[in-house]
Length: 343
Ligand SMILES: NC(=O)c1ccc[n+]([C@@H]2O[C@H](COP(=O)([O-])OP(=O)(O)OC[C@H]3O[C@@H](n4cnc5c(N)ncnc54)[C@H](OP(=O)(O)O)[C@@H]3O)[C@@H](O)[C@H]2O)c1
Image (cartoon, rainbow, N blue to C red; front, side, top):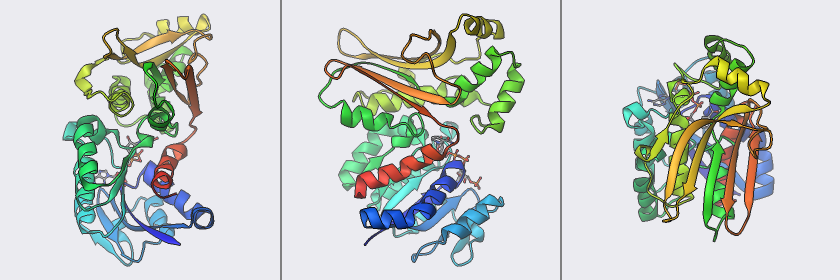
């Protein structure tokens, strides 16, 4: 049995669901892969917990479910420790980085945790778009120098393996275009408004459903989709794109009348993220709302669907869709990435 020591920074929607998956699947993972994943450290915004023998996942989950901090963990609670302190101190094999995107604060603490982990020889797995959108090239270079893996299959379109498909299954192809609906919140809100729900109420429902955070600007202004497109461009198309390279239009300019009219015609609006290959071989990157007819390959997406379509020279056009009723599939990508490294 191979023991893999994990450190988790961020124990919110995704972090907690990942712990639950690990708890539920421990026996299956040991039997099928001969792997025992042991969480030795975890951090939230109020502190950390560390125990080199392993933390009790049930106790971590109970603390978080009751609104507490892991720093209150019985044997190993470390009040006052930052996520960076934990990563610096921990003896572990993998960092799972699941703190908020925080682009306004230079993607911290995620970015520095990832740098620290790699410098300490840990692999890094993250669904956090912030550090990748800001510093993809630097992080990949660091991973190479340190001979560790940087994996992030959950960073684009939740549980849909958008990155894996693009990097592994489109090998050898010229990708003519990528069309994606990688953001859940915008589709959900536009569908609600198209059906006659006032904007503010649609936003409240999206928050209740857990698909929209805070004031919603990150999603509604198209930043989330743009960050995902930047990651796809770097990882799949191998172009050094940044957020500045994306022409970005969010959904706030749409009126309820426009949304309702499209619905009446049998069409629906989606926030499309596109990379289109130009004759010179470079790519035009854009995020903008578009009306999609039912015949469009992405035209039948429901309110909790995300999708990605690769159009290539040799593999034809491949469209994949995920229905993500809650963030469990997104959290499960951290297990997928772990098994890609060790399985
Ligand atoms: N939710 C999804 O469906 C989804 C899907 C794909 C990717 N993602 C990405 O995954 C990441 C986590 O998302 P989430 O939905 O789990 O977020 P979340 O529910 O807001 O949880 C964030 C976690 O990070 C902790 N945290 C915040 N600031 C911190 C700091 N300075 N130091 C240490 N910990 C800090 C929070 O601590 P407290 O517990 O103390 O508040 C919380 O545990 C984000 O980058 C998000 O973009 C999310």
